[in-house]
Length: 89
Image (tube, rainbow, N blue to C red):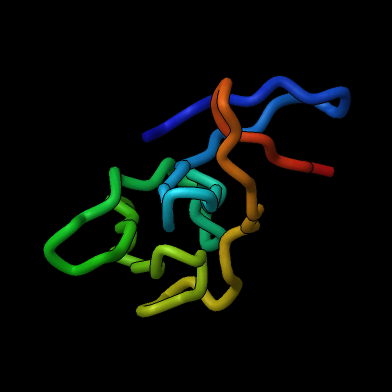
């Protein structure tokens, strides 16, 4: 799921993935190589892909294939009765 989160310091484009019944992970939807918006999560490879220069990122935001060398910002959240809670700085 791709979401935009409003924050006091601006906004962030994030991809949110449910890890378990009580845990969710969110990663930046913006490639660390040249700031292109990533494609949606590819279930076949379990990765996010950059359409600009073919970088690949694992579900946790780590780099799987360059040219990107920096991991995506990553945030862990918990599932609640009303949705998911994240702390994003």
